[in-house]
Length: 113
Image (tube, rainbow, N blue to C red):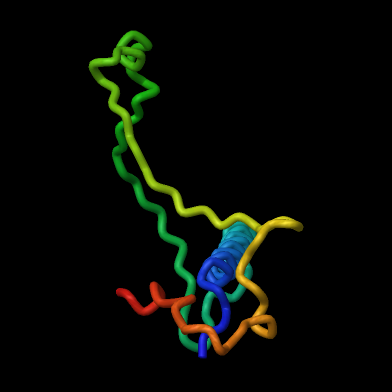
């Protein structure tokens, strides 16, 4: 039975991803600054590859083009944020506070994929 509210699970997953990204950055910095580190593990090896690519840099355009509305557009995005519930705010009760005699509709949207 899945008793963790989906919002809490999403927040936990995002926290774990952030932790993993920090660790990746630490390891990357170590390999880039300490060339003597061993590059081979049991199942993987680290390779440092230099690549060159041509990119478009709009900062190099004249200011009058960068600020011309004819070359601008609006971009609309939808952001799903997780916000910690503060004291006094209503959230889903802890699992030990559930009234299991009620219908099981609390997580009905979780099964819809």
